[in-house]
Image (cartoon, rainbow, N blue to C red; front, side):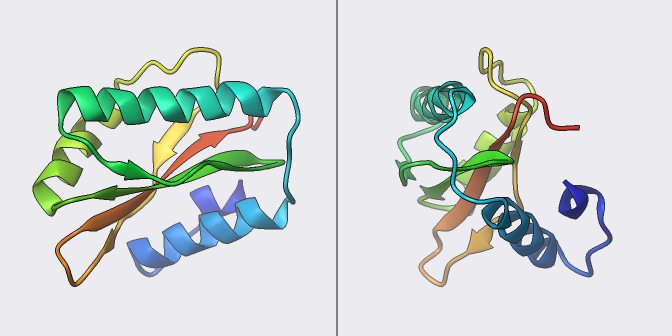
Length: 121
């Protein structure tokens, strides 16, 4: 994905570029998306167990990867989860990452979790 490696003026622009590039590849229900959806659910359940419960929207899958928006109640819980992201083992799914968050006026933090297509370069 070009947006992941591209130069962006702000983290928010990077997030928006990655999400736009994913969506532009078109919806997908290919067999690999079942593993990606399961990986996103595993990720959510681990955060629920190790940090605190979060609200996760159903994953949307595109030809380049699957994404789920996850809402944390505050910045502290988001940061605690973010520190665990790199060490997560999510099974047979492709690479995973957490995009720069949206900080809401309420204090909540909304993050987009992405699992890339397994054969993505």
